[in-house]
Amino acid sequence: MEVELSAAELEQIEKIRSELKGFKKDRGQLIPILQWIQNRLAFLPPEAIEMVAEHLDLSPSEVLGVATFYNQFRFFPPGEHPIKVCLGTACHVKGADIILENFERKLAIREGETTPDRRFSIERVACVGCCALAPVTLMGETVHGHMAPSKVEGLITRVNIEKEVKEREKKAHV
View 1 (tube, rainbow, N blue to C red):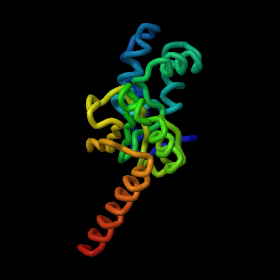
View 2: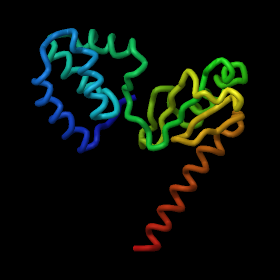
View 3: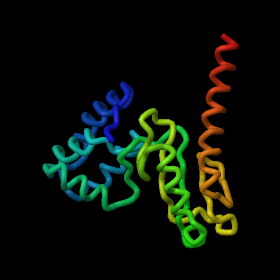
């Protein structure tokens, strides 16, 4: 799935390109540079991987290999409504993997990806610390405990309805 960068992201990449010159051309700087870029863009687009590879005189596959090894790095922009499905032990035992699959199917994206309209993204997380509510899903900052596969569509529908209501209200005030 290819991510189309916004004008603001393209502008930010150009700023990063010029500021990258301030980093030593040392392989030991690879992770700090990737973290710095992700802090700026919220993810690591292919353009960033290429830029870092060029700066450190590494191949893009070497940079990508390191970045994909660590789960702290994102390769898709986070969605406006990030969904985190807990797959810790308590949640896993209670079927969290089926909940994750339902989100993936309903949104037509895989874990770690973002919908093309950038409204939703899905992540698996190790534990959210709400084991008594297992299985748990976070949508934004809201905890949804005792999740069931049948609740997935309802959560997505609620977000879509709230967006429609806000748009109607905005048009009514104009």
